[in-house]
Image (cartoon, rainbow over all chains, first blue to last red; front, side, top):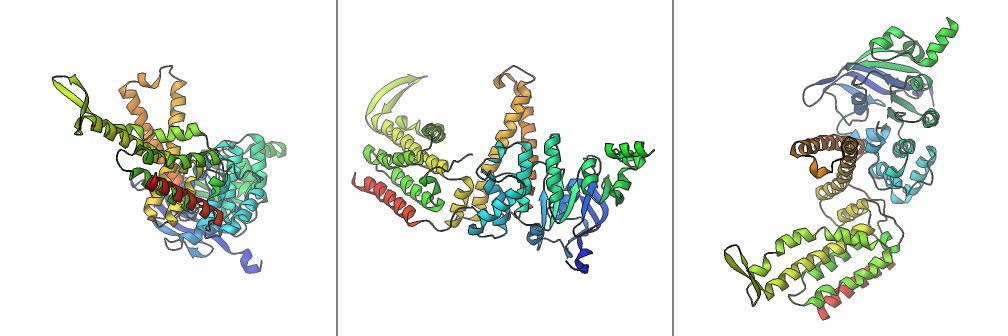
Length: 254
Length: 248
């Protein structure tokens, strides 16, 4: 990877605004840049517009105004298919993402849409499942898996498409502490650019180099994770709170 | 809908199974009136398929029985309107109603043909994964819009069932009354909530599909080239069914 690729912009969002079909504004003048290889967090209270913003990153939603560029190319209806191969979106609810009768078919769904041949499918599915520690579950029906397992398989469905940018919406929601810790380690071990929207600020602190604070459809703050997350006034004004680990550090040093 | 792939029948290319099933359905539906042997004999090779596929017979019978209320609704008037020798009569309100032998036979034929066809389709559905079935239809040049609608219907029926189950559980936790004691107001509220929930979930599922490159085309994981053995087996089955239909 040369010098140029180090500063390559993976995602550029410029003046993005979005209104729901009923006219309700969801996002207003969003500007954000994510450098290739970086892990970025998007935090904010419920209804802030985090999921709506993520849905713009791989062209599922189209901006009412402004533009989204992925790896230098503006996301349009014409190139949405290629963009979806580059940006893998993992949804908050794995049950919405897993809709086939078996894990194999679910993981194969994306590669098949990319035009991958049936001969290569077995290898691709096996590789994706092994990355998330779910090898051997190919023939299991997704609804027979635990929530933690379903979250891993949902991640595998996206990894099988070999995206360069991984977008995760509340990846740890509803998991028990062990499942949460294991999945957090798994996400940390995945290479590439990552954009993570979450309320789990401990995870954001652990995984993300920088964060964007979203509230009322607008970015109200952005900067290095530890600095922003330790700003108590900022956190409380926007329905969040300083993570326990930063509070402990503060007490120890104070 | 769970399909356990544990037999050779399950592994046969979906196109072959669809075509073979179509031959069986045509043979059953076009059986001449009054020829019960020709009508019922094609089920024998299908029973053999059922045994080979090791599918639960009860499950197939339940699925095929779904068609009975509809066919009975159509056929129930035939004994009264078909011309022929009256075999029984009775008073209905102020009129005397006669039942003809030809009418009873016609009713039996309509119900038999619809159930036998549904039985074949139930075996097809029990031995083929939904995505493979839809991909098979697509490869047989059935329009993409029909195939996508079929696939999404299968998917959303499962979602709707899940929603109903969850709402029923939540309701039961607050009331001991069975569903038929809920009252119209309460029941209609549940139906509306269910509809709104289903719409929202369907929207989320569609977004998840679109984000993984879904373009309206369902692509199955199965092989594109059916094996010689599968082709020969299906051909033999079709010949037996057609043979029974013609010569029995």
